[in-house]
Image 1 (tube, rainbow, N blue to C red):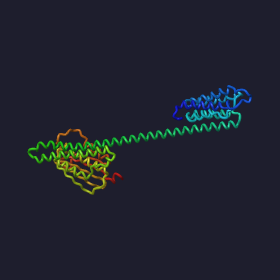
Image 2: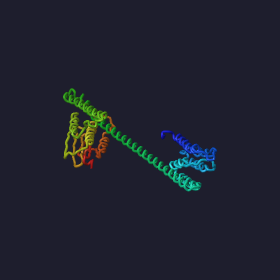
Image 3: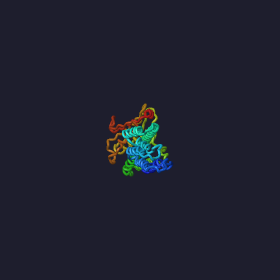
Length: 376
């Protein structure tokens, strides 16, 4: 029934009440052996019809119903009515849908008017109990609807917050993937460009070196393809998160790869290695890769040094070079240094960069927390 439009339900309710109130006219015979007075029929109809608009104008509906029923006994030839259901339903509606002041006024008006106009104390008491019950049920219904609305609003808010969190997580994931792809491609392309430019110069004078340059180009391309394939697999498959990812142990191989491209890269560690979260290991690899890419692209350096310094709760990665900023002519405007800072900050670390304090060249210093520092 709740699926029907409210006006239809209220009309059906008015018809039902009208039928119940007319039933005494049909089930009882007038003791004076004459038909019941038309006045009784008219009052029953007038008292039931206002229920049709009880939700739109509850106070008006209750007033009309009460006034009509109070005039029922003006004619003698009418059957007695045990209960006036229209007034009780209208009182329930006022209590359920009206604001505080109108419903309190109508409650006092209904109960007080019943006590004053009804002659029998028993009938008056019964009327008071019925109207109080109708009012209480109406208030309980209003409270139930308000509670349900509050729950629905809370559920909608939680759904919105959850959706917003999912979107933020997706945005973070897209940003991470974009950074990883930038690092992979920029590193590989930079090495390939440097070797491709050097190859024609030495192809006649030093064939072995030219061959090594082409081998380095192929190796950089294959490595980029492998890493991109891993990343795309992780995007397509639910189990992609289990695909191999770069770790601290891969930094030595990264140094060798860049050395094959013609830049003399040394790699060293000091201190007692501590545990790193997997995502921080990836970040350590990527910031080192990005720093080496910047050296190849822009520094004009002949030597670079990667040092890992393990401390109690911090891993320090120090990448230095001896360049003077006269590297190959790559397009300007990259975000390499910004990306290094963002990766470090994402895990509670930091990154500083600037001229080397101990000589010509440039230095990148990245601090990343160890696992126990992150979970503490």
